[in-house]
Length: 382
Image 1 (cartoon, rainbow, N blue to C red):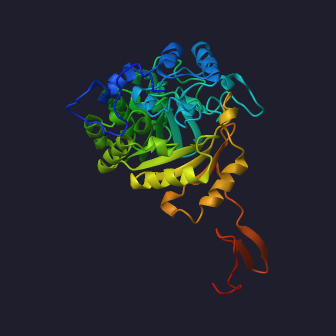
Image 2 (image 1 turned 135 degrees about the horizontal axis):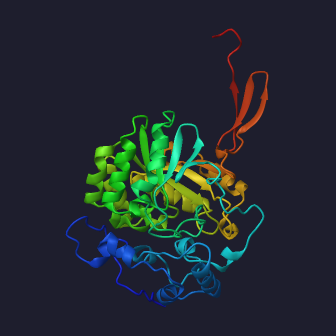
Image 3 (image 1 turned 90 degrees about the vertical axis):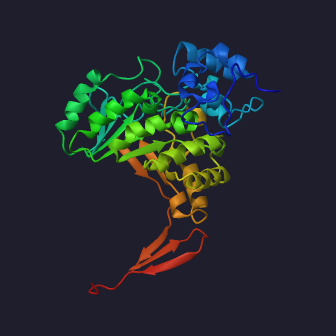
């Protein structure tokens, strides 16, 4: 069965130009205007399973809305309900089920809000929530409580108390601009916001948390890069979860960012039935490095209400990291992280490679399973 797309799509294997657009699908604004946002549109675009029909109808009435750009839709296999792109963006009826551990606000962001739209969970950094809109609404979104439910981009006037708080707290050195997706905002709006943050003397680093290189790569235009370059150092934190997302267009977007001086880090979420096997992760991480994107974190999926079907046991992530250790170089191997419920912060998780300790001798297990002793220097050698 062929895909019954509603609209002509930009090719996923074509890097969209930043100027002189040759077809509507190459324009990021066109992509946002024509994003699928209803159950009926989704049913016309894809042959849906009964569970997907149930999930799409539910998403219209409650919970996280539907939004899928034509570009990202073009990556979906219409004949495979287990397609790893499809499972990330097409609603599932199981989103209506709660399991033990589910939370509406898993990272305790409401409890850690220090000013409107500003969250502080660490002494030296804050999270600035600049919008509630994304190009695509991922079904495992940690902010499903708020994403897609408001007015879109937050005005500078509404962000004034947050900016004032930042000026009054010189201990804060790092600002993560997120949402929603800040790069789904108009260029002028995001540039004005970044300029306001950069003008705060104590802020060393600004990070832009965005999935547009994955879901809307034509957004990374020359216009955007020229508007933001004056405010370096700016880091981009993006979010590739599967090798299928590393299209020619997506890789070209990452390369444009790197060429313009934006270091790009990737945070992959470990998702059941999507990327929870070592071959998929190895291919993804190698592909990211080739695109000059550093695999930064492999994140245990947050326990968002209604996402139990997409989460893995913690032990699965430890097993995968153990399998990848030694197979991938250090620049391709991310840290495995659990962002603890309630906003207590991120905890790195490592397979236990220390087998025994006694008398200054520590026995270590290598990635090959070999046992090797490391002998500490005797007292007084320093």
